Length: 158
Image 1 (tube, helix red, strand yellow):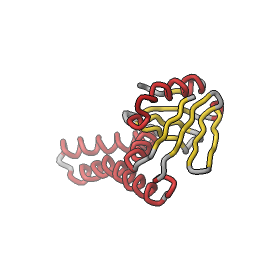
Image 2 (tube, rainbow, N blue to C red; image 1 turned 180 degrees about the vertical axis):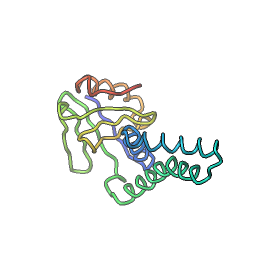
Image 3 (cartoon, rainbow, N blue to C red; image 1 turned 30 degrees about the vertical axis):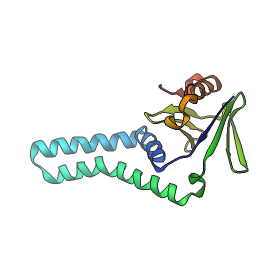
Image 4 (spheres, helix red, strand yellow; image 1 turned 90 degrees about the horizontal axis):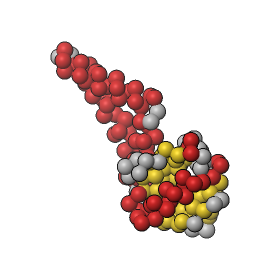
């Protein structure tokens, strides 16, 4: 059993939003089209295409940053620490007097970013574990997740 206490920040939510958005075809395509627009706009001196391309490249990260800050500001639960317990039954998330368990077989997938381990409990909801806050427990958390979920669902890269 491994326990970690995490207090999320807007930066942690932004990291999650970036990973979630840019791992989808639409996010990748919009960025690629934007980059091609910028490159061709510069090459052909077609300034409108350059501007539209730049907007496509810059728009998504700015919107995701705004959404992360809004979500944090509007959710009182985000401002309190979460306690994550990883054991043979799954992941238990506790805060104040509330607790919910996610059995290992219900986990959709686990991925990592440079800053976080993200465990999707549904297709769109996730448990975010900032690596810096997990500290010395991080290898144990990764091991618990790796042993608990189907290897096909485990996309954690150390």
